[in-house]
Amino acid sequence: MTEAMIRKKAGMASVKDMPVLQDGPPPGGFAPVRFARRIPNKGPSAMAMFLGAVGVFSWGMYEVGKGNKIRRYIHKYIHTYIHL
Image 1 (spheres, rainbow, N blue to C red):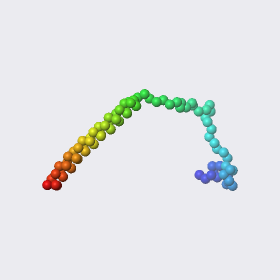
Image 2: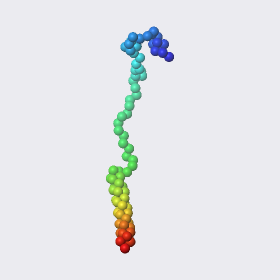
Image 3: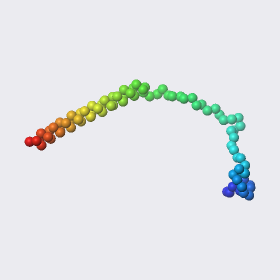
Image 4: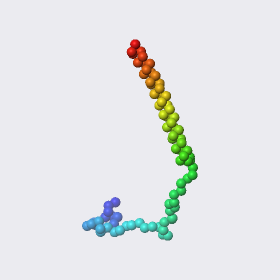
């Protein structure tokens, strides 16, 4: 459909000639909106998450240290044969 058919006018010289079609609130107004923050008390505490992260980090560093020991041993073992 064209604008002329919708507005029942032959044409417009400007946008300002258009009648204002604006929606309003429903009769009686909108229903109240509850906007208060409700934070659930589920899940681990902040201290538990922190200690878990420290534990995972410590275990990772332990594994890195084990890998470094193995790498140093292999490096030393290979170089003993190279220098023979």
